[in-house]
Image (cartoon, rainbow, N blue to C red):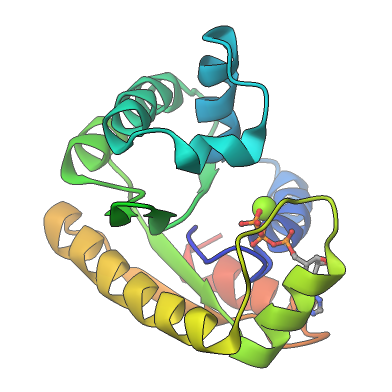
Length: 184
Ligand code: ATP
Ligand code: MG
């Protein structure tokens, strides 16, 4: 599952996890960024939001290590909470580059979006994170980049992409659509 920051991935996944467990399947929800941060922390990084400021080559190495850990997961359903791209000083770079897709072997992609104004407000409400400067124009740009990046993932891996709108106050509706899309 991919989506730009504040679109609601983690919120949706919390509900999805419950529903999949009710279907008597084992499920792991893995935050790709958290896995990368765990590895980075062993090497001295202290701030989670500092991850995206590391040199891209270092982030790429962390991506590979995280992907290898994910590939070892044995649950019936493994869901990865991640970003289609990461903004870095060098530009946008892919969250799921070809070498990572080869290691993970995803069956489905879910690309979450919402109205730019809603994403803006959700980011402003959430003060647990240290976010980059937020503008509406930038959120619109990010939604465009997300769409291109996830299409590339589909072409590289052959897996389908479901686009989901996480409308304001409509978490259950979005969750239902995702559950149906992944055939649960
Ligand atoms: P990040 O990539 O930064 O981890 P995220 O995509 O996981 O972001 P969340 O943390 O799940 O985003 O959600 C951001 C905020 O938006 C939270 O405060 C959450 O409660 C709120 N939110 C999520 N979905 C909805 C919705 N459908 N309606 C209203 N608020 C929502
Ligand atoms: Mg999240």
